[in-house]
Amino acid sequence: MTTLGHLINGVRVADGRRTQDIFNPSTGEVGSQVSLASKATVEEAIAAAEAAFPAWRDTPPAKRARVMYRFKQLLEDNADEICRLIGQEHGKIVHDAKGELQRGIENVEYACGVPELLKGEHSKNVGPGIDSWSEFQPLGVVAGITPFNFPAMVPLWMYPMAIATGNTFVLKPSERDPSSTLYIAELALEAGLPAGVLNVVNGDKEAVDTLLDDSRVKAVSFVGSTPIAEYIYSRASANGKRCQALGGAKNHAIVMPDADMDNVVSSLTGAAFGSSGERCMALSVAVAVGDAAADALISKMQAQLQTLKVGPYHDGDNDFGPVITKAHMEKVCGYIAGAQEQGAEIVVDGRGVEVPGHENGFYVGGTLIDRVTPEMTCYLEEIFGPVLLVVRVDTMQEAMQLIDDHEYGNGTCIYTRDGEAARYFSDNIQVGMVGINVPLPVPVSYHSFGGWKRSLFGDLAAYGPDAVRFYTKRKTVTQRWPSAGVREGAQFSFPS
Ligand code: NAD
Image 1 (spheres, rainbow, N blue to C red):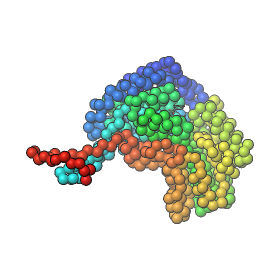
Image 2 (cartoon, rainbow, N blue to C red):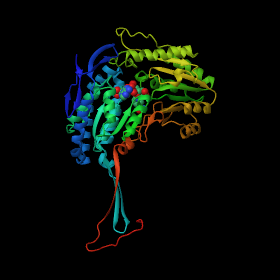
Image 3 (cartoon, rainbow, N blue to C red):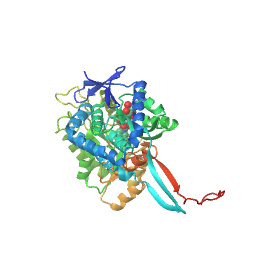
Image 4 (spheres, protein in one colour):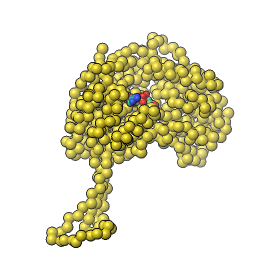
């Protein structure tokens, strides 16, 4: 059986002290193993990144951008293999993996513009014969720690911009599906990154803690669940590092009585059940305003769910695949059981779904739960499975209050034909990414991605313009070249 190693200083290295199984969730079988890096292995990767930094920092931005152009081309040329690797270890259907990869490639495209993005700010004659400018310098070695659910896209939110702005990088991907991440990193090297500029260490808490504690690592980008995000943010910050830590979510859609219900049902279906609900922007709660809207939503959604196909990743006719692990499948089923016990109504139950020929896969069918109330565990916690909850309220104000009271604030949307209501919603709702008749308002690569409340710890969001600022530090230079022979006396008042 293959054991995946690490990518350090341009070469694959093994560290066979501890390993972990990697499953194919579509079959439930172990496909390979991943080596879990020791502290010493992670320190080797940090040392490689540190050694590569001076030359890479001094490489002109246009040359760094040229590597990104080649990288983008290699990603497109190898898309089929990348998506196969994603599907095999994550379980998402190939067409969904293609969408993920495309969103990742768009971040590489944005990084191709780095000479423009690093131009800085200049002011002439801030005083007599004095010019001043601000420039944006790289930080040094930066680290990224990423989740299982977007093994291609989320790392591409981070290192293309970090590297294009002149930093060197150590990436610690999810140990549950690292193959596509490693494959893509090798393409980045093939595109022309010098050895040591991008390093990948596979591993678990030991690897992560080493990155958080090592003083050579200047900044940490994290994406994953909220408890770990909070831990990463606290520990990295306590160690004096810049940190952005994106966490979990519970994304609500308000369904107003005037909404086009057929449109609502088709777009909610994709947003709730696509990728088995394992997206941080998945819409997991529909808040129906008025019983008429709720009844219409439930009956149409119930019918729609009968048409959904769940099955293995490689069959493009399937709408969604398995969840990531057996333990996660059991956890999702536990939330459904808990909802029932706490008094909600299970309208469509995805537990025990059968996928002929793949009986041991980690499947949960599309599940619809009505009459959910805010104190239920299924409402309070992130389920991260193909489960849509329906909460019934009487007014839009009540719906907005629910969203504002929830601990997460990643994404939300409203379905309505009333522009005034939509504008009031987007102006006032306490959530970072808002859709108006758009179910998954994931910002494009030239905006930035970030939730509010406990969905993001830190001040700067991921990718886009915020990433340029996150991966650089501002230096402001004030300069004067006095004419030869001109001498000034000492000035004791503050310069003005
Ligand atoms: P996770 O928090 O379990 O793992 C994320 C990373 O943290 C992995 O690399 C993992 O190895 C590491 N990690 C896990 N436990 C750790 C510990 N105790 N100490 C140090 N490191 C640890 O998340 P996951 O299950 O891989 O991903 C799903 C979660 O990620 C969901 O909550 C989802 O909402 C969230 N997510 C958020 C966004 C966003 O942009 N806000 C995007 C994608 C996923």
